[in-house]
Length: 274
Image 1: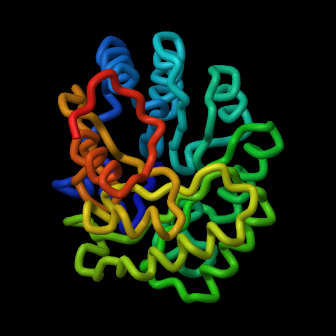
Image 2: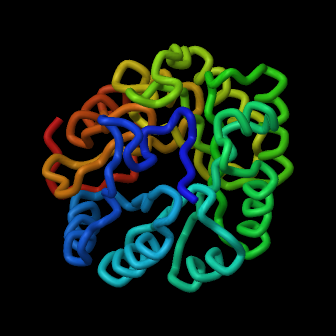
């Protein structure tokens, strides 16, 4: 079975702007990309893929861990079970992402017809029970109510999740939701503030750069975000596309802006020109 979410351009063959079997990378390509990331001062990498690519992601994790000291988050959507979680743990995974996106059962079924909210929640508990850091995100602006968001945040609070990505919906071309308006930045900021205030177990509050772009970068951080995702250095050797947008953040463009606003980062580069 090939799972496709109504809003997602990552499912193979869905969007002309999305992914097309980009997990088919040779081992030396993965090694080269990981080493390049580490050499440019970034300390954490995400290994993400759609349904049906678990073995490829597990192999990539093993390569990254063998050749670098990078922290690794793995996100394979609903392509997880207890056995696979244990395999990731044995391979040295630092964080496993299992996004719920919404906890409204009817909305979840509408947007993710081949997936199961109950199963995703079960996976979240299994990750936590095995002592692995859990990342579980909220997607705002997909038709959910304020009550839905409150319920979702409360669940994450009780779960004592370590990382919460707060993602504002942005339409991908060719998907069933391509004509739906993007989530207002103000709504995304509101949810970021609520998560930061209520989820006390947080180690990091993540926002994917493609959901806020440059204009939302500083407001997002001021609202409480502590981790900006989907950022790569100039010259990164692989194709990367972001959540809700093919655009990604460029490290060399973002660092000067953060420096201007006196925002410190954990990026360590030998030469950075501001």
